[in-house]
Each structure stands twice: as C-alpha cells, then as structure tokens.
Length: 279
Image: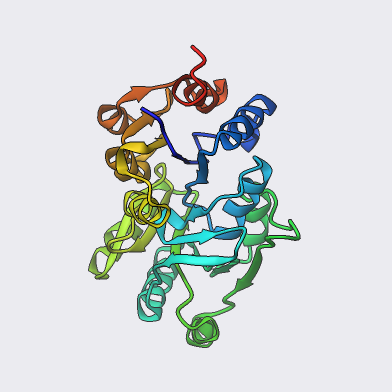
C-alpha cells in the first residue's frame, strides 16, 4: 500500500522526554514529506501551538488541533473546519470549575482564556513555543465570576476546546460528575487530574475524515499514530492505525500495529517501516 497522509499525535506520541522531538525523527519526517506524503500534526493542543510543532518538524501541510475541533491549512491560512463551543456552555463549565476549585482553560485558535492566575506558569510548562512569532499564544484571565459574560462576549463564541486541570484527583472526579448535567459536550480523560472537553461530534477521527476528503485521499491511504483515548477514533478510521508502545490498552486493542514507545522514537520507526520501507 502507498500511503499519502500520516496524522501524528503529539503528547505521548511524537514528543519524547521533556516534550522534545529527536533530530532523527525530524530527519525522517522531512524525508517522508519529500516523498509527497502529507504530514499532519493531530493534537488536542490549541491551533497555534500545534502549528509551532508543525513548523518545528518541517511540515507544510494542514494541522488538526483541539482534538479535531480545528483543521487549518497552515501555509494558506485557510480554515478548513472549525467547531465552536457555545458561550452558554463555556459559562456553565466556568461556574462548575469555580464550584469544584479547579483550573479551566478555554482555547481559541491563538488564546487561552482561564479562571486562574496560574495559567502563565502552566503555559510555560506545557506550551513550548508559546512566544513563537509566527504563531504566538495569548492568555486572558477571568478575574471574577461577574466578568465571565463580558469576556465570553469579547471572543464571540470562538472557543473550540476546554481543558480542566487540578492537583487533586478527588476534585477532578467531582468536576466530571458536575458537568454531566451540561448537554452538548464530550469529555476525554487525560490522566486522573485533567479532562479535555469538546463539542459533541468533535473527534480526531472525524477531522481526519474531513481532511482526507479535502485532499482527495482515500481512507486506506491514511496512517494515524497515537497513544491515548482521544486518539482512538482516528486509529479506528485510518487505513493503518498505529499505537505507540506506551499507549493505553484500549487503543492498542484497536490498532493494526504497535510501534516502539515515544521515548524510543516509535514514530520514526513506524514511518521508516511503512513509508520509507526501511526494515
């Protein structure tokens, strides 16, 4: 089979120790791109951070961000698809976050809106490249409950994804229970102290399908590589679904092939095997 597009998750997949990408992986990805294969960063991160990593690996193709909520052609600055979370849902999530004592980030394409003054510290840890001049990331803090409506109105329903953080697994469980009453959202656990939230219908698998149709690439010509629950839909959709060696059991059971771990260049090894045909 000749593959024409490869969609690669970031955290726990392409990113290794200290959220870095090995030079060998970058070299192989560039070789794959030279063969005409589209290399698509496919992540839960907000678009501008995903685009930063896409630049870092030398890819020029579209980026899938926010767990599939945003598909954007980076070189032409064209939004192919975007799913927005309604402002009333965002307000409900913020109120639940305040009630449970957890941090909530609301992501637009280039901005983090948050209920916590700790967000700049968190951004420094989890979002390298946030000051990258081509794709900068801005932050805005909601200082009190009374200012929620004003801030949400300012961004006019531009929120594409939310993510909750806590230092307490108990508070995380409480928040998860509280938001069950909010309709129109889907949740992905990210460890026991974080939850990712999207609009119903949003998934990486759906985004890969949309992008494949946009590029006129058949399902069987697509490789998807991932490690976590939010990657399952694209692993199931792909012609070749590849699980990382460090992937969760549920994803490994859905995959066609299991490569090495993220800290041992598993993505590079899979690309060499299935695209460059290096055994």
